[in-house]
Image (cartoon, rainbow, N blue to C red):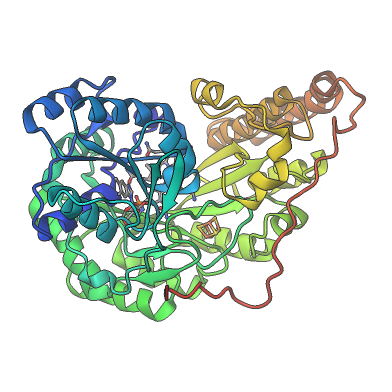
Length: 472
Ligand code: B12
Ligand code: SF4
């Protein structure tokens, strides 16, 4: 999927871990499997470098591959350590699958301690932030406090990967040399479907001066001219954002950038500065055109905020990428119509309509846990379109709904090239097909939901969210 959409960036987590370990005196190498279809580069590196410790970054979809790596590491006599979001969510599964250690939460200090302990021949069980199996039971070390000062982290060790392989692909596709930058860790909001195993609800950020140093390094060392700010939400604090934008403008960095923003934070009066600093594209988590659904998701956003943001981005000439979600518990066909109507009204340049994925560790997952279909591998094969739980309507209905958004986007793109009357007529035909043929046929049950699925209760929130304390 990523190869097709070329959202290719080296893992910032691993590059930061690498830089941190080096500063701590360890010898570090990285096997980047992004461009390879098998584990041959790993086997070659294990043979040549004979590492004492092999660390693996994990996401839910990579679970089987991670276990293969652990087996290879063990066969080579190395201690295998799993870290990253999935291992932090279900460490038991990784230990049962063959990993020697699971590191939960922020990895810098934990991995450095594991590396130092292993080199000294010491027992790693009980180290803060780790879990290991001993005599069939799990030994869990105390929780490691979050890092307080992100400015103290070294710049990512870009030399550990083939940066040109990433930058060259971007350049061939877009003409731009794109790289990723992270300015903060965590997010204080609390959307019901969001998994936050690593940073919890903390929110910490680097100083604008530190961010500017990283931006300059990317530009000067690698010719980067386009940056993706990978923060969960970019620019949560207004004063911080304004200082960064001023720096980018005053230093004439000449970078264009994109980021992920929330409609309640992206105030229209900021857009001029954002544009002047290079803002080219914004990912907006619109999710639904139904206020009822936004509330059930505990999004904390209001429809008028979405409308105001979409309108001001359009006026400012910033490309909008909307994230939309179908199939979240509690959603009816009317809610989907409301989402489509909002989409029609603003015709964002780009969008993705996903089917809600219950990620382990979320309130959403807990709510549908007894209705999981266990189809995660089929989801990967089907390009992320498979339902992973028994939702209100059959899978085929969601597929058709996704197709309606695609048709709508095609019609919007055809505006100006095909007469409005023809486009209106095509739209009417599609709507009639939807109402009279597709919906009754796909529902097969005279329009009633297959099963009422309870929605996860949203956490009560009053006023702006407060981040969790970073104290232990
Ligand atoms: C930027 C981003 C992307 C970018 C770039 C990814 C990249 N190459 O870096 C893009 C858009 C490509 C992307 C794609 C996807 N992403 Co993404 N992404 C993120 C995001 C917002 C930031 C990642 C990041 O840089 N974090 C900052 C670094 C510092 O943190 P970190 O990587 O977690 O690493 C720290 C610790 O986890 C730990 N650690 C990590 N690895 C290891 C290994 C060892 C051995 C140790 C000891 C410690 C350790 O130490 C690190 C430093 O403290 C996160 C959310 C988040 N806040 O993390 C989601 C997130 C990681 N993505 C997620 C998902 C689901 C995806 C996709 C599957 C989406 C999709 N359907 O296609 C793909 C998979 C891509 C892939 N192959 O990895 C989920 C993962 C959930 C899960 N349990 O699997 C997250 C958590 C978002 C969420 N809340 O749901 N993503
Ligand atoms: S705004 Fe919501 S979805 Fe985005 S990172 Fe924060 S909690 Fe997760």
